[in-house]
Length: 441
Image (cartoon, rainbow, N blue to C red; front, side):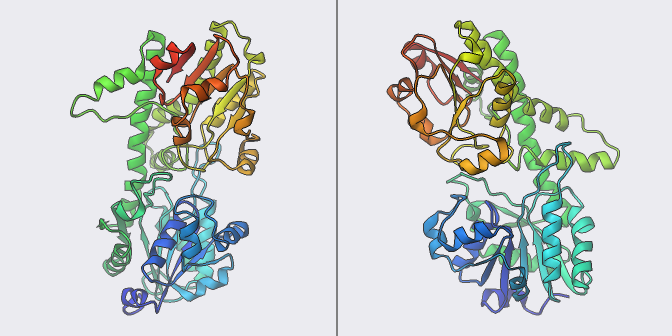
């Protein structure tokens, strides 16, 4: 049973919304609800992160320091504050283990925390990516045990998959259609109404929670497969001495071309979500024929880029182990500080197998994070001198703005200057006319 008029009470500020997990997904949600005048508790177990938010610092760069400084969100790492809420949104990460099985530890931990502070009549909505059935089969029993309440009688749940695209200044929370689902018609109505407060383009209700869970893993699996196709083409075209980007440019002149390009597929969505889907499929006796093979291709691209770099060094007569290589970018995508599951790390690790220790520069990444996750110390742009090879692994706008003169200034004064342009962000012909050896994925 849900509290009477829960939506109206939330709208009037008489009931609080609690967002659990204040990363790239949860923090923008909390800020948006607070902008609409709602009472919002922003909770995260990371005390240091909470302190940054309280100081008006946005480490995710998703909404900016000004928005954090001016928000009315009540930031806390004290879970007892959650007792004051009646509408919970769980937005914690759901990574995979080394064997590619789902790592549900964060969402399980969040469920224990919410359960301990759950009051009768509340709604708990999960946004974390999970396999179909996880919310009801894994999370609900934890909520029931910790709260001593029963679903439907004591609380209800919903699932609304996150669709935020980190670093994207065009597709923002408010203009991305939001999938919503609930454990009952009444909970769905309330969940929809509450999210409609902050989603300008509206919400899209679906019939049940498992369908909503499936939508999330399938939309990212679809992208993963399409990129894997382009990556496979890129590896073949490399043997054929054909420029993949030129092929794609020509293909895209047709009205029904999909526009996908080859690249490194990492991060906490596209590089992870397909494994959640195939994990559950395997449990039901179905072995993926396409999705897992797409993952194999995409997971191999870092090594392919590294090996191709070494071949280019050898071609111009440079000994790879003695060459000075600089990698530009280590985040999992452009214009984003998130380094989780970055496939640039695969390039670095492959180089290390050849006793090559590249210098790494990324104006977006946090040095403490890269050291902790990959044992990589970030260099300053002033350290980029007298290099033999530049691997542009991430297409940050900062790198796109480099002039030919700036790029040339990173290199030794030689005719053996190699550029590995993974994302094809530069005009290859212009580089070659200026004595650069260019390889593109």
